[in-house]
Length: 274
Image (cartoon, rainbow, N blue to C red):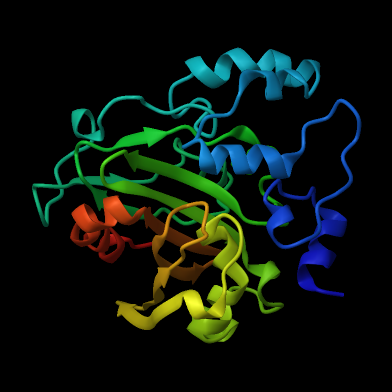
């Protein structure tokens, strides 16, 4: 029995589990999580209100909050629809960027102590996007069985970034394993690639894989050319393991965005630390 299967037996399944397992049969009158996720990726973070209304009275009670609650109260459901430069401080290393450091008020997993705080820089014109509640891991912390989305930021002209967290037990039986103990960079991206692309990852789409040491922490870095990915035809990723979680930073762009912002996206990737 795989670690994911063992975990699923004692923890509620994550809404992202469909990327690594067959889709469950649809029940009449219920929303397909697979379809909801595809709309979330393809629609730039928009989740139709009627999808929430179909999930029952609990979702109906929550629905108004998804559009009105600021980050820190329901961080998975709402985000500031303003440029991040209006509220984030300038980056100490490069004032042309702003500095984001996640704290327990930002996501359910950070509040549950399931993820270590992470940080990165981004351009001041970007906006934080809402993460749909079904993708945030909000309901299954601290024992989510599958990866979830922590935060998302986007700029229509330059691309988008997101932080995805995966339970360590999904990848290895060893508690508190380092990323090297999980396996090679190629082995890790084979497991987590679908969470980079939003659908599938072919081995031929991996252009570069490298290892970076920052203090005592090891990171795997990737350059991917993904013409069929839902997230974009160009993807950069950086992953590390800390505590009981693997944290993955993904920067994505289409061809037009990549031509204009490759340097910016690479700088954001390089700045990511846990």
